[in-house]
Image (cartoon, rainbow, N blue to C red):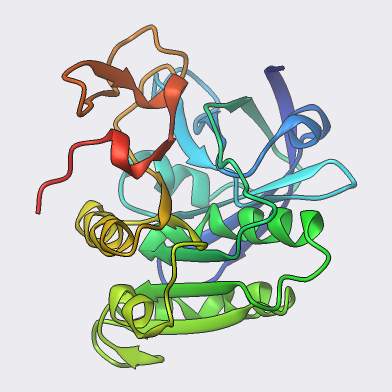
Length: 262
């Protein structure tokens, strides 16, 4: 797998809600090599402060060599990233990790919760490129409130997949969880479910998939310092009793490989 360290030019900065942003970068090498589910490491400051790069899932790529990340301002690093301007240069390293393994002949259910929505746009685009017809596939998006879901809905609508929406407070779509919408579908074992979101959400998704004998792939989050397996900061226990590195062996795993807290 090819990896690149690029000096990427900021093409566009979009503020999609009070704290959520989308950043478009001119990064032809990384964009051309990236697969859905992979991530990049970005230096958020011009100097060595903050010292460490931050990991961001790849939101989507384009044929003209651009890639996008979607993020929420939660600390100093992401606050600095939200303040960059078009024309500035960012140091970007990637693509990294193991992405989704798309099952071309299997109907898909794509589930994104909160910031876990970010990599699912790239996945939806990739699935629809591989299939002649994706009208039987589903996308389920959820968040705590309207602002976490609504800004990206039209981007997902373009693919023609069946779309379900949920918010915890009922301000947009179904009041409740994405798992409510998942259970409402006529599920069968031929489905492949792809999920990214908070850990409790993915644990519930896997439980439903296990009960229905459906394949389930999950993209997990972890603290990362290097993105290359050197720092061991992203180790996670597997059902085999061994540790796996999220940055190298993930972030996408078959859900059955991991230990889930019910």
